[in-house]
Each structure stands twice: as C-alpha cells, then as structure tokens.
Length: 460
Image (cartoon, rainbow, N blue to C red):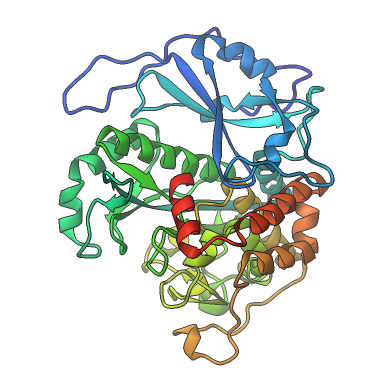
C-alpha cells in the first residue's frame, strides 16, 4: 500500500509474526520477524536506515518515524553541506514504510526491510523525497497512457581483506569462466535462494570481466518497484556474502585503470499493452513514440549523468573501450554506446525489446535515476524528437560522435542547465542534489584516483 494520505492514516493489522524459511542446506523451522529496517537512499547514493521493533509496525505505518531534512545534504563520507533551500539542524519529517514492499530478509534472520516515503509533519508528501519523485514521474507518464518497465543490472566485486586491510578479490582469471562460479558456488546458490524467498525474480547470475566481479539481472517492474528491488538486491548480496566471510563492493571503480561496476538501467515505454520499442516503422522497429522517448533520454544524457553516475569514482569508470557507454550515441546491441537498443530474439520481441543505459553506476540514487529518465523521455515525446543516426560500431572510430561529460563538474553544469530535469525534480530536490554534487566535487578535488577508488570501495 502507498500511504499517501496521512490525514486519514491507513493502518496495518496488529502485528503478527511473518514467516520466512531460513536459507540453509537443511530444513529449518520458520523464523519470526523481530526488527524492520526502514530504508531510503540519500542524494549521495548511500542507503541509510532507521529500524523499529516489528511490534511497532502498525503505529509506524500510520504515523512514521522522525527524520531530519538535513539527511538530504549528507555527503558520501557523512560530512554535511547545505543548499539554498535544504540544510541546517532545524525541522523534522516523517518516514513512512511502504508495506506493499515489505520483505523478510532471508539472509538476516529475524529482520525485514521496507522502503520509506517521507512526509511533512502535516502529512503532505515532502518535496525532497526521492522515492516520491520517482512515483510522481511514473504517474505523470500514466496520465498520458504510458507505462514504463524498468530493471537494473547489479554488478559487484566480492572478496576478502588481507592482514594489511587490502581487498583481495575472490577470483581472477578467466573472465566469465566456470572456474569463477566454482569458487563462490555456495555463495551464489544461497543468494539465489534468498532472493527467491524475498519474491525477487532472478533472470540470471554470472561471473563478469573484472577480478572478483559478478552480476545479477532481475525481471523488469514498474519504475518505483525496480528502484526498490535494486536496493533490496544489493543489501541481500552484502548479507549473503558476509555469511561466507566475504565483503562486497558495488563501487564503480575498485582499481583505477581496471573495469569497474556499472548499474545499467533497462527500460521500455508501453501503451495499451504494446511495447513501443518494437513493431514500429522507425529505426530498428521503434514506434514513433518509442523513438521520441529514447531521443529525449539521449538529449538529456549529459545532465542525466549527474544523476546516474554522480561522483569522481564513476568518472574513473567512464573510459572508452571498457563497455561503460561513454559516448553520447545509440546503436543496436552496441556496448560502447551510452544508449544500447536491444530488440531481443525473434518471436519474443513484443515482450523483451528494450533500451539500456550503460553509463550509470551504483553510486546513484535509483529513485532519482528512474524518475529523471521518465522525465527526459516524456519531454522527448512532447518535442517530437527523432534519434540521430545510429552508430553501428566503435564510436571512437567514428567522426563527430560526442563524449559524455568527462568530469563530475561538467555533468553538474549540464544538470544545472537542464530545464527538463529542473522542472521535473522541483526546486527543493534540485537544490539538495546540486548542493551535494558541488560539495562532493570540492571534497574529492585533491584526491588521487587511488584514494577515490579506495574510499568508494568502502562506501558503496
């Protein structure tokens, strides 16, 4: 349920134990839930929580827990900045759990998790709430008869720490190899079981390119659900890895100069049950409306980079020839293009055709990502945009293919200049985001690539 009207609060029934099967190799009695983590993601991309006893869930679902607005201007290292509209010690909000997204945490027995929405003390949705923004953009599309299907790929690196505190990947060669799976087979099996217990539909799990790197892909959902799921998946990965003595990182750059972790967003706009990424007369079968949506995203991509790859670590990942999508172009199955069109296999394209944004990473707030992409796509439809010529090969070998912004400062400048995203985000949220971006740029300005990567590895 979405508790959107606190003047007539919706209450859950009196607390009853939630059952969850323990994730072990042998049958075990069902556990009860004792504690609920109420989660949100801040503008620096850090997932933060408040926890409550399960017995208080009905009261908290009605009235929330206290929440300082200053959290919106926390930086990744927990230092605090201020914008023109957000910041300082005064004020309070209410964090309300979305009970429709409540999930027992299979790898943390006795715990459950629910994402939260933020409201003012008068019960009005808070203008700086990122999850509310994602829902608002989803509803904006819905009023125009459009629905969006979205899903994030989750890449991470797993390993251990040596006696000196250095990160040691769980495996090295060969990329994508079965030898990697064998090294962490029990961990991956437990992860798949945990995600299934949490009602997450896993499409595939596989070893990736970099040392210690793995990836999980999950089924597409509505935009808010997709953002919720990627947060839940990441924290489940952490918990399962910890049970096996591993630490994990979703940081975009773990070792400078080597392939890092992305958080690619897959999306497709739909109308009246029809996928607008296929069945049309446009490029590669796009419908006219589908092409305009993608063209709007491509137009706003420099500004979107400040949302989807906001920090210095993300820009260490954004280099050519590593399939990070650093070129502002599109192409069919082109892994060097920032916007990759995927038609899918003949016979199932009506269900599977989608577009992928490859330049985003897990330092982003996923709710800001999905909402901003929707806003950009809708603006493309409004303006009747068409895609530029497709780039079929390596963009670096093609003349006049522009790079995306090559620094956080350049991406912030593009965001500041974007009327589309400023209007969509609203002044309060826009002020908080840009304040955090400016402060992070200043904070990391004198750090070396190694220092940036090391810090990011520990934070994300």
